[in-house]
Length: 360
Image (cartoon, rainbow, N blue to C red):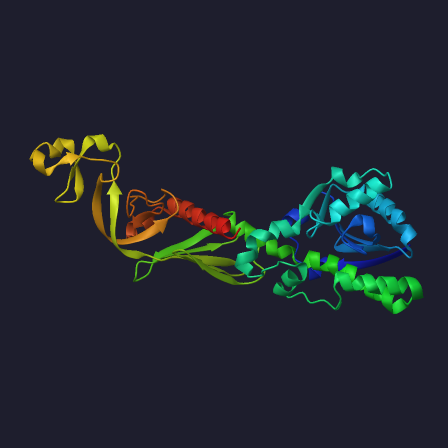
C-alpha cells in the first residue's frame, strides 16, 4: 500500500467558521473500479484534516486488489480520532459503498458513529441561484475559480489504475494521486459557497432603507463576520437581490393600483354594493336597507388606491390584498414605513428566507 502526504496552507483557503470549530473533522474521498460494490473494489482513499495552520492530505493507494481490506482498516484507524466526516455526494455513494465493504470483510463500520456532512446536499438549494444544472463538484469548483491540473474523470481513472497494476509506471501513479488529491483540495476550495446559505437563513444586518422616485423599496445589508465568494444577482416575483462580497441589496418593486383593506369580524359590517365597500353597522344602520346587505369575508373591505409593496406575511401595516383569496399581502409604499427599522428588518429577513425556499 502506498501512502502519500501533502500539506495545504490555510492562507490559500477560506474556511467557514463551522469547519474551524473544535469538532474534529475529517474530509474524505474514495476511488473505486466501479459503482457496484460486488463487482468492483476500492483502490484509493484520500483524507484531509486541519492540523495547526494547514490541512494535511493523506492518500492510501492499494498496489494490488488484495490490499482493499488493508485500506478499509487504515481508514477505520484514521477516522477513529474524528467526530464528523465531510464529503461530496458521499451519502449517495461513498458511505453506502464503504458500508457494504466493511460488512463483506466482517469488520465493524466505525463510520456510522460519525456525523455526516454531505456538501452536495448542503449546496443543492443554491443550484438555481448559481445556475449549475448538475451540480458536479468540478462545476462548483469552476464557479469559485478553482481549476484542476487533473484532466481525467473518475471513470477514466479506472483504466489508468488497471494499467498501473500491470506496469507500476510512476507517471500513472502520479495521475492516480493527483486526481484524488484534487478531489479533496476542490472540496476545501468550494466550502465558501456555503456562505450564501447564511444570507437566506437571515444572517444579515440591515444597513439602510429608502424609497426611490417610483416608490420601489431598497434595503441594503451587510454580512456579520463572513464574506460572499462571488457576486450574484437574481430576480424572483417582485424582488431583485444583489449580493456583493461584504453586503448586498434587496430591491422590492412597487405596484400602482387598487388594493383592499379587509376588516375582521365581517358580522359587524354591512356591504354597500353601489359603493363596493363595507361599513361598520354602527354607521350602516342609517343606510336604507335596500342599499345594504350583510357583509361576508369576501366583501368586507375598503378600497385603497395608491402604490404598494408586496410582503410574504403580515409584517408591515396596514396589510392589504388584491382580493379575499390573494396569498400575497401588500402595504402602502410610503415614507412612514421607513421609520420602523425593526419591522423593516423582519420584512427583509422574511423575503430572504422565502428566496431561499424558492431556490430548493
